[in-house]
Structure formats: C-alpha cells, structure tokens
Length: 185
Image (cartoon, rainbow, N blue to C red; front, side, top):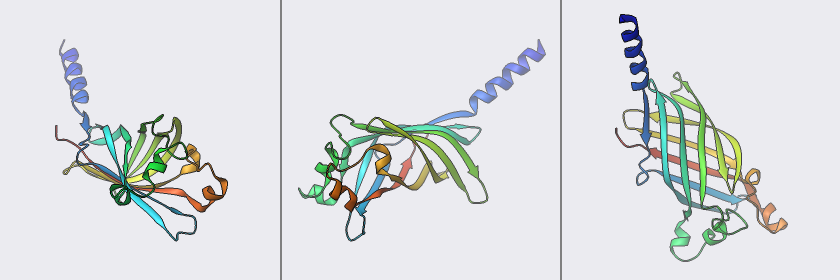
C-alpha cells in the first residue's frame, strides 16, 4: 500500500512539472524583411500571432505551437496606402484568402547552457506546405520571453512571383525577428 502511495505521489510530481505557457498575442510580434536579389532595396514589416503555446517539462522547453495570422501582414508603406503588402497577400506570394494562417510547431528543443541558447527543430506550414525548419532562440524564464531570428527560403513553400524575371529579382530569403511573450500562470 505504501509503495502504491509513493508511486502515485511520484507520478503526480511528474505531471506537476509539465507546464503550458500561453502566448500573449498582444505583446508578441514577428518582424519580417524581404529584399531584392542584389539588395538595392528591401521591404520590412510585421505580422501578428493569432495564438500560441509553449510546453515545458521540468523547466525544459519540449514543444510548442504558434498560429500566425497572415491577414495581419503590414509595413509602414501599407499603412500609408502604398507598398507591397496587398501583393504579398495575393496568389503570387502568401495567398491569404485561401491560407489565412501559417503554423509553426516545435518538434524538439535542445538547450545549450554554455551559450544559453536553444536549438529548435520545427515544422513550419505556409500555404498548406509543411517543411522542417531549424532555428536558435534565447529564452528568459523569469520574464517569460523567447527571442529568435532566422531565415527561410521562400521557394521551399511555393512563395514565388508569377513572373519568372521578377521572381529572380527577389531574394529567396525572408528574414524573421521574433519576440514571444508568454502569460504568467
């Protein structure tokens, strides 16, 4: 009987160490940057999260998922009624009418204490296309924050201009600078 009680307490302690932190979507943001192949011009902007969560076990990040609201793509030019945002939302690029959300699902996370960094392997789904993406991030457990910067090759997700000449003038890389803020439990 005592052994069963101890096993039950140990199992409960393990369950208690698994926590899920909800994303504070009002305070989290993705900054994006795209540029021309010869880097003579660029476009920068933001996109917002719709929802998200980060899962931990015994204080270690073990997974998470984040829904990105593709309708929220914006940049300073767009706010002034010009710029590329409407084109980014159409079929040439993100086809937001058909694919209003992108999804990032963290599959594995490995912590490197000497660098205070995490290596993440995730599945990134854009336009219905899912690809593995590796990136590094820095988490601050006291502030409930996670920051990362990474690039993707847009062509892997079918993000291409319908004009071959113009598509070649655009760099394949899209850069992301991501700030995640989580809600206290």
